[in-house]
Image (cartoon, rainbow, N blue to C red; front, top):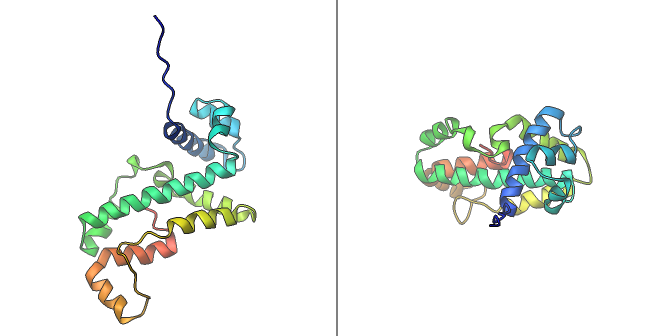
Length: 175
């Protein structure tokens, strides 16, 4: 009787590569880590890595994008549950990081990856383009301009959402 071979989905493979890359980057540093080391840590071949990413730079940018996307989802969930600004901030502070993506669990690695991308001129435009595409998130359909009367009304109506929007513009709203 033959066994049915099940192959991991592309998302499963990417998730395993993200987890492995975070471990390898923390151990060896981003510059010192090789594609072979990341693939081996994930239990894959170099070919499996290249079927998902063209380079280590592309992996890093994909990890940053994934982190931003997951962070926005977590922030939205908190905004739904906590309408009061103080409650929202407390929930944000006490959020369980163990269930988050690798960059959510390790803010230092997150910053190192951003700096790694920002230091190389050829990588900067790609990161900026991809993160700008994610920047379209807004807690409401329209955001008033800062310092206007509409913004004051918005702040009283939307409390935490306004705070998160302001915070995100400076810190990319990472949790």
